[in-house]
Amino acid sequence: MFFSSKLKKFENLRHCFFSRKDGVSKGSYNSLNCGLGSDDKRENVLKNLELVSNRIGCKKEFLITLNQKHSNRVIYLNDKKNLKNKLIGDALVTNIKNIGISILTADCAPIIFYDPIKKIIGCAHAGWKGALNGIIENTIKKFEELNSKSKDIIAVIGPCIGKNNYEVKEDFIIKFIEKNEKNKKFFYKKNDKQFTFDLRGFINQEIFNLNIKNIENIEMDTFSEDKLFFSYRRSRISNEKDYGRCISVILMT
Image (cartoon, rainbow, N blue to C red):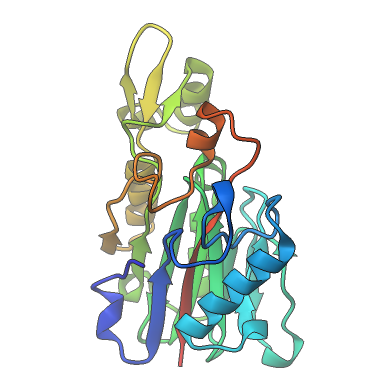
């Protein structure tokens, strides 16, 4: 369990970037796998989600997860009576109290947002595709539609794959350079065919460019910290058939 020093200051907030520890799943899903989209036993994942809801302090039906598609779609929750789980999207925003909104990750970055002035919380799932195609920008747009000001928003970027372990090829880099030539700085040459990508650095720039200056990073590498985090990329290298997902949650009381 990992926490933001910035968010811990607010008595009306509960949040956590959960590790893979202290759950009930077995084998490669050991142990707090919260991904219903994985091939883990459904009853184990549901039990893990119940453990998370208990730790964060909400009813299990009020812990909201998404059907994530690496999109730029933001879901706004504005009615506690009509909450729906597993809507398709990659970010959640709400000003409802006692609702745990969450993001699942396995190398991608979970980002938690909070505006302490307007009392709005948000979370986003930012892999390379979502970050490049505007999931962060769209999340902040939703905050602004709710009369939030960027200068008031706190952004916390959780554990994700580190730049030394995110190997990519040249065709991957072209996607970023076509968007902005300055994105070259997030790529490092490893050999003639391989480069590495600084996902965290790119996300930080995207947030900063949206005039959010109050940023915190939980500097942990999901690929190398195998005892603490699930990793999609590590599972592929290890020839594992599937992988678990870690959960990150924020709730406002």
